[in-house]
Image (tube, rainbow, N blue to C red; front, side, top):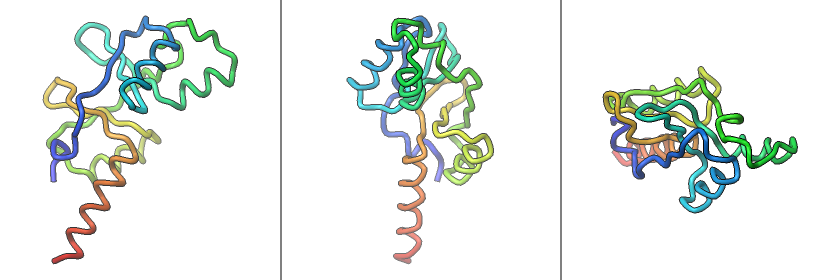
Length: 129
């Protein structure tokens, strides 16, 4: 099963110059655990709930640009790959969110929870045969 089948929502994005507070508000409003930072046409980073939690705990000024706390080494996978490929890539890089691209276009973000859910569905389908 290709990853395209597991993408259910359009990825939520923001500008790298948005404040940390604005990013947190966008995440809350959209009920997502990550935001992709776009600088024009391409993703230049990703910020997650963990990044924001750390910023708060470390006393970082929440008016600073979100890019100051974002991961800039963005890992992506092609949408034609399968869930196991995504799981291995996430494990290899020690990441919890993975950008899914269709060619050069960002079509989604997979979280560890998404991978877990997809693998559970696949296992259940196998058990019913």
